[in-house]
Length: 65
Image (cartoon, rainbow, N blue to C red; front, side):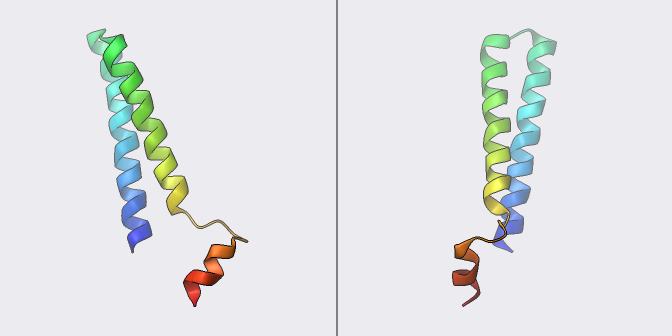
């Protein structure tokens, strides 16, 4: 359940980053919105990747015990 919540939060962070990137082009405030939006996209994708289970990982056997 925690992994699903983490993935949902990661996706929401990435979506807000995409919204910031598009608002940067709309408002032409590229110096503020563009780096922040790209950082949020990267942070959201990293959160989703961290929440997914990697097959063959040694930590999975420890979690099951």
